[in-house]
Structures are given as C-alpha cells and as structure tokens.
Length: 132
View 1: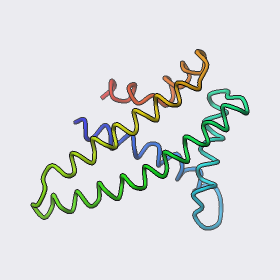
View 2: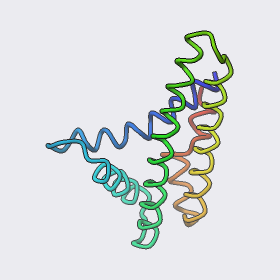
View 3: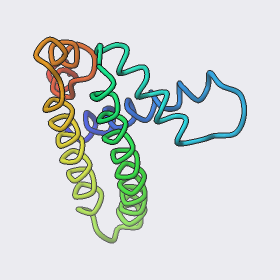
View 4: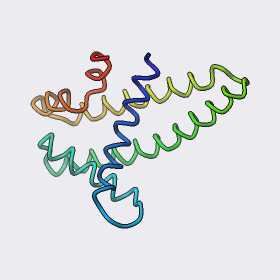
C-alpha cells in the first residue's frame, strides 16, 4: 500500500508538469514544463520573487532526481519480473519516497506559516497518505 501511495505522489508531481505541457503547442520541453509548474505553484501559494526562484531551483533538482529514480524503478521492476532481485523495486521505491520527503521539507523551509497551510492543503505528501 505504501508503494502505491509513493508511486501515486511521484506521478502526481510528474502529472503537473505534463498538464502544463499539454496546454502548449510544440515539442516537449522540460525546462518550460518546470517553469510552468513553478509558476502555478507560486501563484497558488502566493510566493514572492525570491521564494519563486528558490522553488524553481528545487523543482529543477526534483525533476533531475525523478528522472534518475524512474529509470532505477523501471530497471528494478524488470529485474523483479525476471525473478532476479525481488527487493530491487522495493529499494528503489523507498529511495523515491525519501527524495519526495526531502523535497517536501525543503519547500516547507522556504515558506511562510500561511503558505505552509496552503502547501498542506494542496501539495503535502502526508495529506495524500492519510486519505488512503
């Protein structure tokens, strides 16, 4: 169940980027998707320019980590499907969960108290986990 929750959250953040891309025409551009995701989050959370710049940096780092982690999960899943290392997928998923929690904490550190409330309502990873 925890694996499902974490995977759902990872795809949620990836979905935000993809939704932004779907609204624009032209080829896929990761930089534009990250910028659009950051713009949306900044507006919803009421961030100032400095906070928005920090969030953009965090989102770029998260995207890089997400790509690497998804490749590991995919490779681990193939290993599991072939009957090799049954713990590989679980280990990769646990690492993804740690990274997501670290991202959540980094965002929280840059927010003001009223913005943390908005974060909890809209994006907090613990909120999603409690509902399921």
